[in-house]
Length: 275
Image 1 (cartoon, helix red, strand yellow):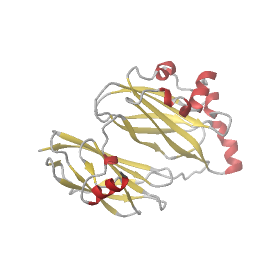
Image 2 (spheres, rainbow, N blue to C red):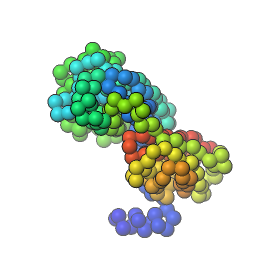
Image 3 (cartoon, helix red, strand yellow):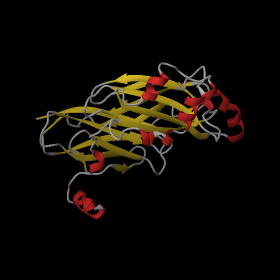
C-alpha cells in the first residue's frame, strides 16, 4: 500500500496527508516560543472544522518533571476554555508557565519541558471541558484534575474517534533576556487570489528566522491536496508548494505552517474562491 501511494504521488497525484477532512488543530503559535517562568505569553491555535460544528476547547500548560504538572499548584494562567465555530477557527489566549520553574532553570539553564495541550471537541463531546469551566488555574487545580491533565494520553482512548482533536506543543523555558523568536512566513505578492476547479496551482513564500536543519514548511488544504506534506527549508529562502484544486466546490481553505526546529512556528492561512 505504501509503495502504491508513493507511486501515485510520483505520477503527479496529491499526498493524502495534506487533505484535512476532519476536525483537527493544525498548529499553535506561542509568542514568544521561549518563555520566562511566571511571565505571560500569547498562544494562538489554528484548526480545521470541515463540518462547521460548534466546538469547545480546553488549553492547559503542564511542566511535568516527574511529579505532575508544576502549574497544578496555582500561580500561573495555566487553563483556558473557549467555544468556536466556522470552517477554520483560530483563537488566542494568554497563558504562563509556573514561576516555580525559575530556581530550577538557574541550575539547568534553558529547559524544554513545558507542554501546552489543546483538547478541541464538538460541543458536548468532552465532559472534561465543562468540568474545568472558566477557571484560569491561578488558584490551583483539584487533585482529580491534576491527575487527568498530567497524563492526557491515559484517557484519550476513552473519547470518541470523531469530533475530537488533542494536540500539544513543547515550549522552552529560560531566564534569557533575548529569547528565541518565531520565524517569518510571507506570501509572495504574485500568488493567485482565486483558483480554478480541478487544476494545478502554486503558492510561493519567503521564509526567514533562526532554523535548525529540521526546519520545514507544511501545506494543508480543506479540499484537493498538495503534492507533498512537507518541504525542508533554509533561512532567507523562497519556497513554493504545489497543489491541485478539487473538481467541485465554491472555495477551499489553505494553511501553510512553518516549523523552525527550535520551537518557533509561523502560520499563514487564506480562503480561495473557485471558479
